Figure (cartoon, rainbow over the protein chains, first blue to last red):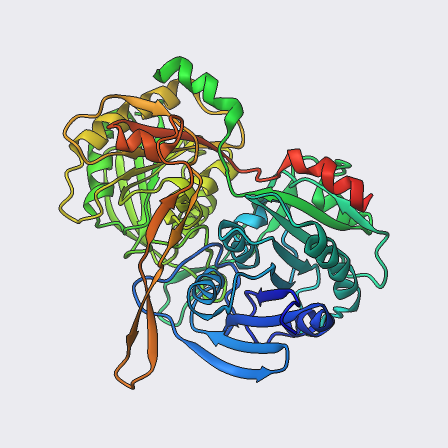
Length: 254
Length: 254
């Protein structure tokens, strides 16, 4: 068992969510697995970190090839704490998911699932965020685990460049047409709040909204890949510098 | 007053923090200002959003050219709620800061200050995150407000490309050598936890750590600019796609 790959898994729906369980079970034969995931839902936590209070971890299961911890922190806290204090060695792969819900286009910025993948990448470990477009607890993860396994086996063999992580989204259909390498769609959310009133009579605002793609139907967009029945696979970078605009700014500031 | 620029300001240290007050006062003559900021500290909140509970806003001040609201949400919630429900028209500029503490290199991923700038950019408004390297409440913001004003006046005149926002960091010195257009430094945090014990005798972990730059002294890094006594100005992109790696992935998956 010593030479098997070590795979660290987290998510943002919590350690008990069906998505992370399905993913874990589907790749147990590929390596030794350490699940280190939040003790409850942390959706929309992005790359948030916890510093005002300490974080805690609790061992839930330890058996041959599988160890499971829950953690009081965010998805990024989970990766940080696991990597600093709980991994027996540097993992060969970090997976985050399977998220209950889509994480394409600008949603990569809000997603706790992707936050954990970014963090894994910062640690220099090949990292993949995995999401299914169905956000219900009863979602059917069978096709997503099949597709994920293809990507996992590829990354275990080939690795990823330093500073690059992957964002995999799988549509909620029985059989995808394939995996389409895509780019992050442009767009924004609109009509984002439902105004309501609390028990004291004060106005309160519930987050909701619709995503409006700027280029619907663009053949390379991740959103379009899903619409067409493909799983979308977007390579993403830790370095967010806009190198094309540096020269223009330099004309003014240097 | 109708033709003056409209400037929306938020932060992640809370509406009462000295940094946001100093920024607001220093540019009041440049336009009508709407401050819409968290009701308390939200450091390290990244682009986190609040959906499990509703968010609320409270009017704190309304006078000629300046309106101030506090909001129960994260920095991104502040931008979303202000833009959806509270702005009289689309702002000409969104500022986030002045943050009490540095936001360079990979810290852009954890920063609530930058989360708000990203969100402003998603709304199509030129947006700038502003940080001072001194994280104390008693920090001296005079040089930072002077430098910020130079950037603000430039952006009000020239705008920014769609999908690009700015990350401005100012070193804690009486006079910077200038503004250096820079790129996000590579590196990672190490020794990130101080292990301790809570009152029940359970182990708890406090986030701490040191940043290790992969390329210290690289002349184009934002970290190096600060070390040299310059303010660093990094143009950043909403689109995190690694376009250089798409072809390589396509060789395997298409």
